[in-house]
Each structure stands twice: as structure tokens, then as C-alpha cells.
Image (tube, rainbow, N blue to C red; front, top):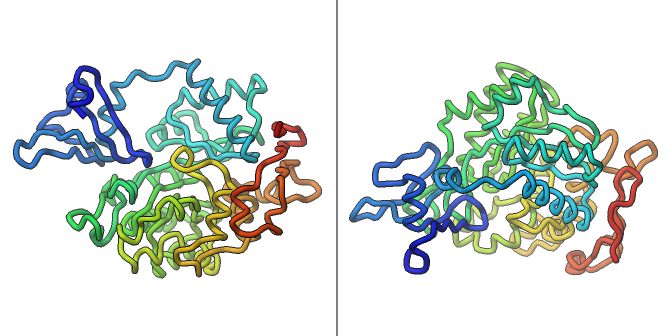
Length: 393
């Protein structure tokens, strides 16, 4: 990277957002040197000199992020408007929106007050802002039908693509590592306990089986100390599972929030974790058969925002096709189940008298096209609260 750019600081981040590489200039500005250490992150070092080689994993990326100029409020506003437009063009009537900062929340609220938010927003708040929520006395559900406080988001591990998802056994294609946990068990216990006690919904990013197990321990401890029915805590991605983890999820009443398009984009997964573990990656059918609420999303911008691509991935799955779903089952994960995950199943998620008039009109009937044709269906019209927010030209 230094050979290409040496004068200006450069940070290149993998599509997953969990690993990146910085040139020497960026490392210097960020103050990253031989002795630099960061909790929940790894700074790769040259084996001979011990100096950073530029590769940064997980929280180590934040050392560079913090010295990058922050976007202005105008830039944030423009980005939010474009994001909302992209969402409604793809047929979404509601998004679970994980914000990056308090400024982003302010911008969303400002745009809502100005009538510029065309769809419903369920806010995901990073755990770093947890104390601010406490200070303001806010809990899940604060807001209205358009913009509402949703869940607290906690990253427990990294990604399979970056070899940072925490596995119980080493990676097959990189046996020197098993990934990493962002928090110690004690720290994760405290964070989930704190949010749970405050009546906040918790969503943990947990991809590897070790990370999922750590999350289950923390949720179990919180629910033992502060029993609460209907908490609807979630495991985001919920990728590398096994039968025992699934049974424990069911017992704890956890939601499996999965991004189906990973079945397509993670085509290398057998090479990465081996056949035996790959069999248990994104086991849609098994999760539903066990009675777990499965919710589907996109993980945009990591994956395409179009929900029809996710539905196609679930229905036309090639690897481990026994875990594929019917079209009806797949749609349910994006509609009624998604409404359940935001405590909205009584007012949205199905087309019924008395429910919110949130409707998406498609170019073809997905129940009457070949499986491969689902991904080619387009959105003709999008209606939110009875108002047309998008019409295809």
C-alpha cells in the first residue's frame, strides 16, 4: 500500500467492515506503533521487526477511524435522505437502522419533523451510547409509529470473511486462528445485564459458535437475575450454529436475525470452516422447525438491500438445500416475523383490516414464478401508512 500511496493517509476496509489495511502515513497519524494495544482488536505485526504491518482487525480499526474527519451534519442529512430513498425503491416500508452516532439520531429526528422520512425507522443504538440512553431515561419503544427507539447493538465477534468471527475450533483455511471475541465474558455479561435491566431490547452481533455461546451465557445470566417475558432479544447473523446452541436459543426465547444473502456471497464457507460446521451455517429450516422466530434482513451496505434477493437466497438455496424455505416461509421472515422483532405484529406484518396500510406492489407474483425468477421481480409501488412513497417510472 505504501508503494501506491505514501504521502497521504489511506485506510482500505474489507466489505464486511471488520478488517482493514492502513498505510504507514495513516498509522503515524493514528499513533499506532510497536507498543500500541487495543481491547477487542488486533494490530498485526511484522514477525521480524514487531512493527505494525498495516492490517487492523475489529476495534483496532477505530484507532484510525477516530482521526478521520467526521461528516458534517449536512453530509449526514444527505446520506440519510439517499438511504431512505434507496430503501423505499426496494420495497421496504420499515428498516431496522443501526446508527453510528448521536448526530445521526438527531438528523433522523430532524428529517422526520420536516416530513422527509418516507418509511418507518426502528433505531438500533450502539452500546457505546448506552449511558446516554440511561441519562435520558429512554427505553425500547420510545417514539412513534414512524421513528422509534429499538435495540442496543453489541458486537461480540467479527466476520467469517475476515477470519475474526470467534469459533470454538480453528479455521480450516487458516488453522493458526480461531477468530476473536470483542469482550471478555464478564464484560459482556455486564453490558447485556445493564441493558436488559433497563428494559431495553438487546441485539448482539454473533457469527461464530464461540461468540453465540458467549452471548447465550450472558443472556441466561441476565434473565436469571431479572426475569422478563417478551424481551425479544436478538442474535444478529447467528451464523455458525449446532443443535445444542439452537435448543438453548429456543429456551431463552431469543430471535434469530439472519441475513439470507450471505448464503450466496459466502460461497467459500465450506473451505473456510469445513463441511461439518458449514452444514450448520444459516440453518433456516431447522431454526423454524425448532420454534425459533427467524427474522431476515440485508446487512446493507455489506449485502444488497433488496429483500427479494434474500427471499430468493432462502428459497433457491443450493448448498445444504435441506435448509431452504418455501416462498411463504421466506416472506414471513421479512414481514410478520420482522414485525414481531420490533413489537409490531399486532399492527403490521400482514395485510388485515385495522393494521397499518404498509404495502408493496410487485411486478410479478413471487408464488407463481420459477425460483430463479424471484430475484428478477421489481418493485412497482411502495405504500407507507396509506401514502404512496414510491412508484416505478
